[in-house]
Image 1: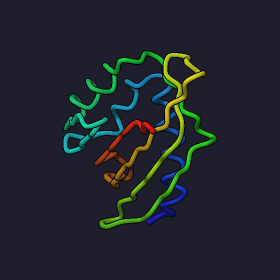
Image 2: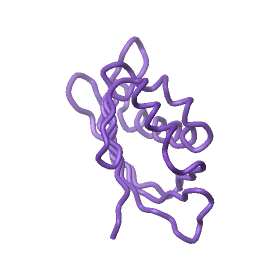
Image 3: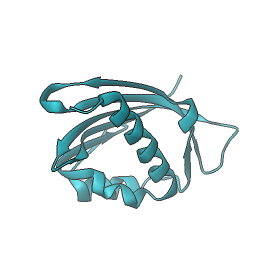
Length: 125
């Protein structure tokens, strides 16, 4: 396997930049067997996941990509586990940044990587 840390780090940068500019462009990262849990709501498959991501209540999101805490581990079947925590700003409300955590399982398929599992939670203290 290629370096999981390098792959995971590049994935995180791409994912959040794409999420922040146009969430609909994330569709190619998911497959029919992918699963998303977004603050307790589950969606399975590319179509259902994209419906969830593109129908979120906030219109604009900005993740603090430079300030993210990223932990990456190789796992079974050449997959990669990625844990991310950090801050995001929704709808330009910079006075009230929100803490979030997100976990991805990245799996190789046909020379590319896809998201098998995606779990997102806002962290309220």
